[in-house]
Image 1: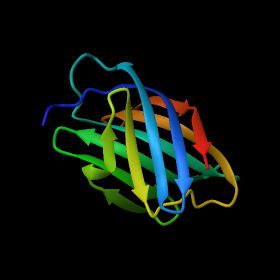
Image 2: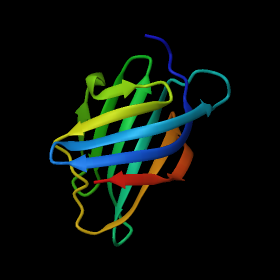
Image 3: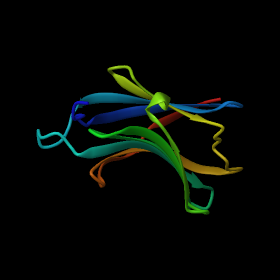
Length: 131
């Protein structure tokens, strides 16, 4: 498997239905110091009406693995999905989170983010909810 190259996160589209959540991460130019990253993440941050973090839906890529995940802050639990739930379409990555939901009655904000080896490289990226 080749070492992935992190790219700029331009936008995120999220579709929610009875089968789960599908997120499309629209990507731009490569970012970083020109060296491949050991791992990086594209994600969606969901807050409640009170501003508290509720969930992260994300995709983590490294030379060793590609996975999708959902982290729930209140219970401090994480569901992991293998690489079959992530599709690289060149200009975008599509992640499927089966049996997942936004899970919040009153959503505060939904924004996209990206990290390289745990360091933020994008925050507050626009997310369009498609329901």
